Image 1 (cartoon, one colour):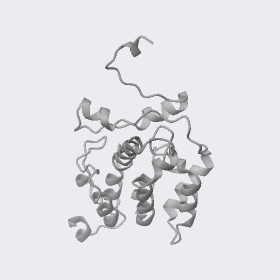
Image 2 (cartoon, rainbow, N blue to C red):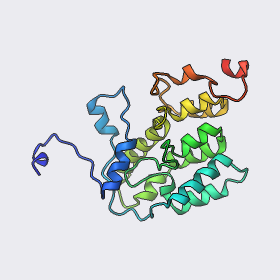
Image 3 (cartoon, rainbow, N blue to C red):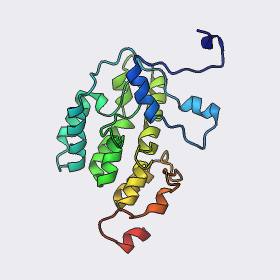
Length: 218
């Protein structure tokens, strides 16, 4: 109550403690933005009207394994996303965590395993009408803000283990097509460092199964 009397204070509201804890573990403000910029990037408060149900742990695991398997038919992934937007986004407007230990979201999983079509599918929904589906009654401008925030999180969110972004993982494991896809988005920050102070360019093919000089040069 006292803090709300300070007109310049800014808050992010949560419906419950669990959503607040989840957000605190995933929220990243890019290092090259100012405080005033971060206000623009910050997501609006979660809506009370989100109609999609929360996922069970087994549903998260099944969805992640489907991404990692990446069958030629992506119908299962499409069905999941179309039935429940929370396979990709939480009510706090952050990426859904599909692997709790490493705190990997869908793009982390696709990037690590080089599953290009799965990554394209995820990014198509994230950059598309996903937030409008989450909050159909909210105005277009606010949902645009939500979308920009979510896109930034998906492309630049570090994982818990080594602080690797999806780009770090794609580069480490030598998935050239995935690297090209991620770098095709202007929001992707190629200068982000992991917990070891390494940019993506510093870990090229460091975890690849086979050394390929041509791939490393590219």
